[in-house]
Amino acid sequence: MKTDKSQISRESLDLCSLLVRCSEAIFSNNRPAAIELIKEIRECSSPEGDSIQRLAYYFVDGLEARLAGTGSDIYHNLVSKKPTFSDTLKAYRLYISSCPFKRSLYYLANQTIYNIAKDATRVHIINYCAHEYQWPSFFEHFSNWKSTPPKIRITVIENPEPGFRPNKKVEAVGQRLTFFAKQYNVSFEYQGIASKWENVKLEDLNIGKEEKVIVCCLFNSSRLPDETTAICSARDTFLKTIRKIKPHVFIHGILNASYNTPFFLTRFRLVLSHYSCVFDMLDSTIPRNPERVLIEKDLFIPNAINSIACEGLDRVDRPETYKQWQGRHLRAGFEPMPVDSLMMENMKNFLRDYVTL
Image 1: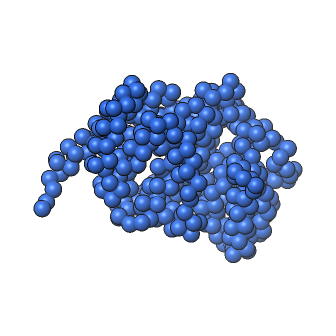
Image 2 (image 1 turned 180 degrees about the horizontal axis):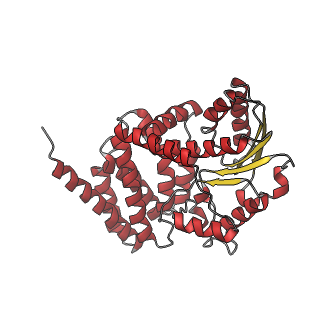
C-alpha cells in the first residue's frame, strides 16, 4: 500500500506536537499527563522509522529522564558506552563522505596550515580536541612536498578521562598520529595534554622560538562552561590563553546553534528544530544501515539528550551562534583573517560537487 506524502507530513507534525506537549507537561510538573504522553510517543516512534520517528524514539528517553531526575545518569551512560574505534571510524567516514560540513572544515583548516608552512622549518599545531580524522590527509600532503617539508609538531589538548588513566585518550591519539606520520615519512613530534581547556597555561605548551604556531579548535568549544555556570567564563579564559600564545592563525570551527538558553521550554523547541534538520539531512544522504544508526546514536544523540534532560553544571552542551562567538573573539583581541581566493574557489567547487551528487 502506497503511503500519501501528506499523511507522512501530518504524522510527523503530530509526533512533534506530542513531544512539545510532553515537555510542557514536565515543565508544569503535571506528571500524569507527562507519563501518558511519554507512553503515546513510544507507541508512535521507532529507531527504524523515518527521521522524526527516530528522533522521537531518542528524545522521549531524554524527556523521561528529566521527569525522573536522572538526566545526568542517562547522559553519562550514553557517553561511556562507546563503540569500538574501528566501528566509529567506519561510521564517521560514511558521515563525512555523505555530508560536506566537517570535510569542508578539514579542507579549510589544512589548506590554511599548508599556506603558513610554505616558508617554515618547524610548524607547531596546537589542537584543542582529540580527534585525529583531520590528519591522515594532512600528512599525505606533506609527503608530496616539493622541497624539504617542515618538521611538524602537534600538541593535542583534551579533557582527562575518568578513572585511573586520565591520559588514555590523548595517548591513543598520539599513537595513531605517529603511525600516520611514519606512513607518509613526515618528521613528526607529538605532545598530549589531558586537562580542561580553560586550565591550560602558556608554559604547558613548550613553544619553541623557531616554531610557526597554529591553534586549531574545530569541535567541542560548545562544551566549555559559559557565564551561567561561573562568574569567570571558561570560554573567555580559553580565548585569552590562545591570544597569549600569539599564533600565526587561530582556526575555530563552531556549532552555529541557538539552543543555549536557561529556559527549558524554549530550549526544547530549539533542540527539536535543530536535530530535526540533522536527521532529515541524514535521511536524505545516507541509506538505512547500521552505520547510520551509529552516527545518530554516537555523534548526535548524547548532546541532544544532555540539552533536554540536564540542568546546571550537568548540562555540558551549550552551543552559541556565530555572532556570539565573533563577539567573544573581538573582545579577546582577535581580528578576522581573509580567506585565500584560490582556497575559496576550491571550496565552492567542492560544495558544488556535493550538490550535484
